[in-house]
Image (cartoon, rainbow, N blue to C red; front, side, top):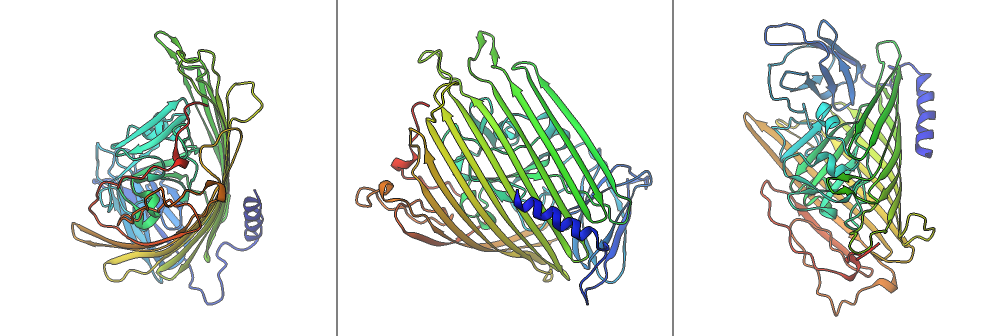
Amino acid sequence: MHPLLFAFALGAFAHDRPTDSLPPGAPAPHEISGTVSDSSNKPIQDARVSLVELRRLSTTGPEGHFSFPGVAPGVYHLSISAIGFAPRLERVAVADSDIVLNIALRPSVVELEALQVTASPNATTLLNSPQPVSALGGDELQQAQAPSLGETIQALPGVRSLSTGTGIGKPVIRGLTSNRVLVIADGQRLETQQWGDEHSPNVETEDAERVEVIRGPASVLYGSDALGGVINVVPKELPDAIGRAGYVDGHVSTTYSTNNRQPDGTLAVEGAQGGLGVRASVTGRTSDDIRTPVGALFNSGNRAVGGTGSVGYRGGWGSVNATYSHRDERLEIHEDPAEDPEATPLQRIGEDRGKVGLTLPFGNSRLEADAGFERNRRREFEEADASDVALGLLSKTYTANVHFHHAPLGRWAGAIGISGLYNSFDKFGEETLIPNTTVKTGGAYVFEQAEYGRWNLSLGARYDWALSPSSEETRISRTSTPSTPTWPSGSRPRRCGRRSARSPTTSRTTSFPAPPRRPTPSRGSRSSM
């Protein structure tokens, strides 16, 4: 909660300053404006225009007009989308004058997401992405909403859900899951879903802008955990009122599922004054047992409640933002009635996540940095009224990333970045699923893209370092277990004892099957709760 309070204080301080306050010697900001029309030059109302790099959003009025005042010199991308039209992505270079654009959209019965920001450092359309990417947003995302992330996105090509009950859905991409598939929320990686088949990602999609899915290896940008693919839950942009009057807005959405009597609702409120923007949302759902033609599935209900608060400030010097999320879940697990018809095992999960981010423009280049924290506490009980924890899992993760998006070099544009992660895991309760561990990782990458007519080229390389010591009681004798080979995919070796693994990682447009993983005593599955 401390990062969010700090950001509120910072935003209050920034609000007292003029929106166009600039450091001494900094270039004056300009305005990007224009109109959106169809092929017959008729204005399109309610088109969404996004200034991707600055994460600013505008909606066209009756005359199809949009504007982004207070934009510092640099190279940006405008994403334009409207219902009934094909999306468009425009590259805009702001120098020493205002930019006025006339953008025409062509009608299309197939509506694609306007852009993707997961498969490459620079925003591209889904068709021009260097890797296969699917996106779920808008009405389609609302209609696909389910208690778990896996169930929500399982209709996308190449994606399935590994489920062992209501509210438990692990995403599967082309047959790979758990720690072969990386789940991130607003660029922050989540380390909570790789322990067992009853442990799925604890992230809310009800109030998200869209969900992007990379099908296939994405190790250059995200490390070896992304060997099977990446799932990115992209939040809605923070509002701003730069160049217009401040405002407060909100919306409520509700659904009801009749089978398990599940009400589901989200309340969101947002507002802006000058460059300061605030957004908050609360989501809750509850359900009874699932009903089938032969009767109800005993002990299959669930309950989840969570909320997210974000605050940010945009100015001529750059932008800063902070986000805090909390989610609490109670999941009942249906057991085979032939074994124990009265079994009432359940899970209680608490998830806290915070992130602060900073963006600084440097002419046609920009620097992005962020730091995040995640705490996931999972408790499993043998019976509904039990007070003793059968299996307890506590994970704490700290992440940091720095990305430098350099100015275009001819047709080539890209980024250089470094990332770090520290994860500590502690077990408690009567049972043991995996031992206590501490993992430290670091990586550096370079990724470049270029367009030559209808050809899109991408090149990248990454170097990763990992240290994963474990306690004396859980070390595995190296004499009884063969060593883990190093593979070109850059998979992080899982070793016990104080050893480090260093291996460069490269990414090509071709892919190959993942190497078989050697079993270890620490990765067994429990036969019961």
